[in-house]
Image 1 (cartoon, rainbow, N blue to C red):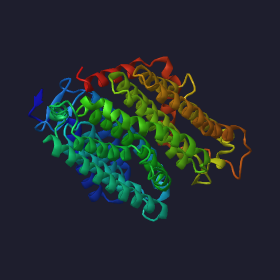
Image 2 (image 1 turned 180 degrees about the horizontal axis):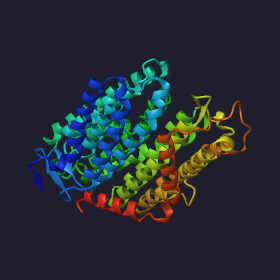
Image 3 (image 1 turned 45 degrees about the vertical axis):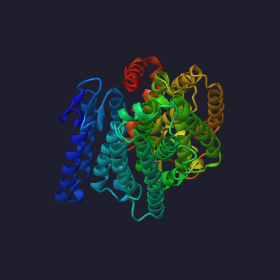
Image 4 (image 1 turned 90 degrees about the horizontal axis):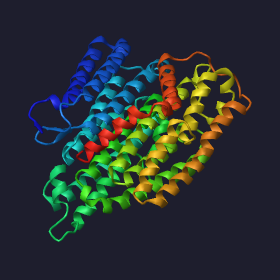
Length: 482
């Protein structure tokens, strides 16, 4: 169905106009407007989530076929919007305490969310690029938002340079695909990818490789992960939490749409690329994190590993695999936000603690924070009956059903290795002797709320998984034309 009006893009229109309005509000009200702008940004994101849940039809295209609204896009948008809202709340007190609480911060978050929303609804290589760059430009600024910090400035510069490289790879790949197919529209591409001889044009295949490499950078999948540890460590902690959550969800959903819709007939060809990226990501995430001493760098390598597990589901190339990816990313969101909320709650004499060794004694002075962080760590390790176990179960079962037995075995072994550094954090919190002064007992409201909600979801998911799994099934079916 083609929609000539703007109803298919209501969440995007709301975010665009609200972002401009909040920017003007901040300009006229001055520096004291940060808290008001932040709360209004959270309200806008929640309303956008509601609008994304109510598409007019199962699949609606708009803007001459450049934009599509369907249950798959709705699922990814809701997760990205909720993650953005949660990280804005998590950063309110941190930004004020660290001296960079500026109204531009939530406005940039709004525009980043707008870019993510356009990405997952892209139905053309050009509209995809527009959403990708809108998100990326906002993220570059957010990474370097703490202008007086050398680490933050370095993080922003590294992210910008490597992000520009990935954009160049994407455009080169898109130009090859256009040159050998004559179109950039996803629906037309699907029909023209295989020539009359039943073979894939070699130039188009090279284009798919370049596009896949660029998108692998956006999800920080190996071997395009080199920016992730430095950016995660250097960026302000709420920004790191945002990087680890919302953009990852949008990018993995975009990756799935690009591979399944325009290049669905070439599943046997791109499957090899995804399998390689998945294995490399799982192994690097498992082994490189062992030697880390900074918890934010550890979480960076952890996120690389989790993207590898999600790609295991995508490697299957079928509806079951995409359902597993969506379930996994929803659970990953809850686990990750819980872990970063706990990191934001850990302060000694008003100063943030980021070294893993400094977590010693957390269970004595902050037992609830330690318990929530332990739940997140056990879940990330895939220990039943926590949510992370079921996330990995869905993607591994999809790989097995597609005959990718070696990939599933490698995933299980990588999960066993990664359990070492997750459980080491729990051991340090509960059994190591405290170092220095005890942790501050007061908790900021934003991180505490996210911590409680994320830990509860992770702990109790096994009791009622049907809503999430059902929504993911509907979303995956929409991507395959169901």
